[in-house]
Structures are given as C-alpha cells and as structure tokens.
Image (cartoon, rainbow, N blue to C red; front, side):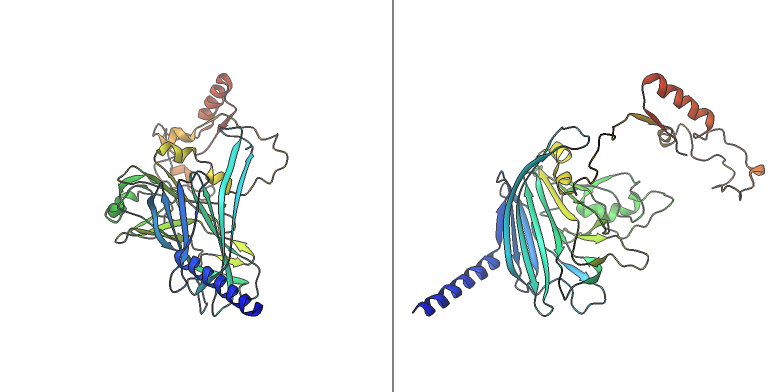
Length: 373
C-alpha cells in the first residue's frame, strides 16, 4: 500500500509540473504592476509575455539561438527540468551620478531547460523590477555544449500595435544619425531618408533599428528596448517584421558573418524592457545600472567628475570645419602634397584657437579642454 501511495504521489507531482509548464510560470514585480509569464509552446519553444497593470506590453514572444555548423539549434524541443524563484532588495552607492544611493529591488525566475535529442542545458533568468524586465541566457558547464558559434540570437519582442517609435537606422558602424519619429509601419518607407552621409556606415535591413529603442503606444504607455552587461558578446540591434509588428534581436557580425564565439559556462547580456506611463521614468530608471556588472575598482576616491569644454562642438554647430583645406577630400601626413593645398581659414582645431579655449576655461572654472579635429 505504501509503495502504491508513493507511486501515486510521484505521478501527481509529475502531473502538476506538466500543468505548470503548459499554462506557464507567472511572477510579478515587487509592486505588482508588472507581470511576466514564461511557458513552452507545444514543440518546446521557450516563450515569454509581459503585462503592465493588466495591459499587454509584450505579446507571447519566442526565445532561443540559431547555431552555426550544428545539426540542431537551441530553438525548440526543450522541457523545463527546474525552476527557482528569488527576491532581492539591497542598495549600493555609485561612483558618481544624480543620486547617492541606488536601490536594487527585483523578483526573479530562473528556468532550467533541457533539450531532447542533444541533452543540452540552458537557463533563462528573468528579473522583474518595478520599472521593467531584464532577462538573459545562461549556459552552464556541460558535456554536450562547450564551444559553439552563434549564427543568430532569436529573441523576440512582439509589440501589441503600430506604436510610435523614436528610432535610429540599424547600422553596424555608426550611431551618428538623426532620430526619426514614425509609426513602426512607416520605418521601411522612411529608412532611406534616415541614413545620412557618414564616413563609415553599414545599414543591415530596411526595417532594422538600433537600441535603445523608445516607443509610445496609442494609450500613452512608453516602452524602451535595450540591453545591459554587454561583455564578450555582440551588440544587439533589432530587426522588425512590419507585418506582424515583431522585433527580433539582430547581433553585430564579425568579418566572416559570425555573431558570437561562446565557451560554456557563459552568459548572454541582459535584454531589457523598461515600461512606464511617464516618459521621465524611462530616463530616471536605474534598472540598467542594476543589471550591469558591479564595478571592479576597489578604491574609487581618485575618480572625480569634471566640467570641460571642447573645440569639437564648434565644428558640429558649423561655426568652423574639420578640414584644414578644401583642396583635397582628405589629407595624410607624409603623403599629401601640402604645397598645393591652401588653408581654408575655417579649420577649428588650430593651435591659436585651442589657446583661446584654454584661456577661457582657466578664467571661468572649467577643468579641461577637449581638442579634436
């Protein structure tokens, strides 16, 4: 009888685990306003969704990785073999900033997944703060996943509508574009005009944008997509499916097109979603700081914020120019024949001009002068 009861109890526990996985694991931010659900699709694909005050912010979105030269990627056929929850509440002091102390307060869900057929493990760790969600992929030490090359990270952010976005064109080389404000559905049409002349630029998609990406819903909810703790990993851009209104992570490749060389144990950066009804809360959020790695400098007493001025702004505003001469598109020391080049008289980073900046800085209490040109 005892043996039968034990078997029955084990079956009941197994049933409960399967039910939890099928309906999803839900947890909330400390203030209860944000709610996130993690679940597996029928084919074992990891999926999450996010709500704010009961309103959907991120619709069900899939997670995973496409691997290079691998018979099976880390996309599906997963089962949840362990789930752990935790809460954390502490404070720390930054070296400098607008506040003396930063509170690090979150609830956490860490789901350990095992892939059938490969026996590979992957942990997806979620943290809900009062101002947003952070999540990352963790690859523990294991026999069947040691060295692997990322072809693409398949993290989705499924939007709930055709939001207004404040975006920069997706580009591997530069962020020196003007912001474009438009509906998500208008990005493709406006992309050509958003890419202004720059010395080095590599746009990657007609609907690709950079992070951090700020959006506003029709109901006045602000959403910001970005990342934190970007260490030994490729920078994340976002590529938009403008029919389904779904963003997918798009990593910066190396010269051969590969997007990450990994060796377990290792982690991805945190993917972040900051949410608020007030745009000022997005700027004031400390969630990114809390997800970044702690400082590694023990003695920070020598680090002092300073006030400085720079010649650079003079060129940016058009008062002066970067070029020494207008006779050549560029000049190289020891190569260009300067005897044929006439100074244009508008070059900003000259010795005489920099001396004026130094005198002004000394007179008015600036700590330094930045010279660039």
